[in-house]
Length: 147
Image 1 (cartoon, rainbow, N blue to C red):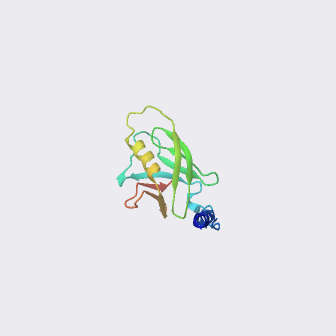
Image 2: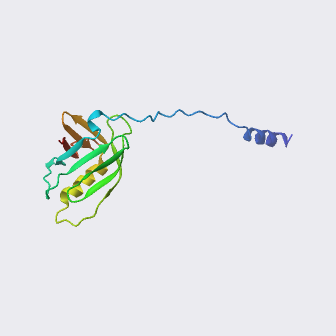
Image 3: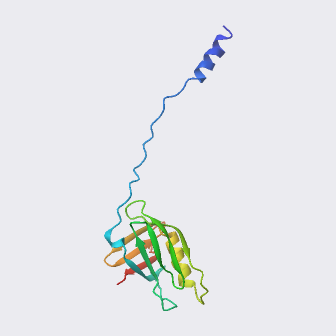
């Protein structure tokens, strides 16, 4: 009888549980809005302040939605990298690589690259693209549709 109880406990511990099936949310790719496809977006404001280029180059962002590639001019330097659209209204930039030219004033360029890095959501209204961080409050950057 002394061996019966430990043997019963040991057998109970060896019992397997039924496998559980987990359901995960569908991660189907989001179809990018027509306005994002190949549009050149010119930087207008950065952190709610006018963004005036210090050089004679346009500061812009262009998204290639077929390849999920982002590229643009940040002021002095050009940049290129990836982006993702995890859900409707969401936008995430992957690592962005930039040239490293020496320029006298990189404040707007640094702010623009930081805004792209912090962007989590976007809204398009008429000819304006607004990028928001988390939590969404004032836009990090406001860009207008270029020619």
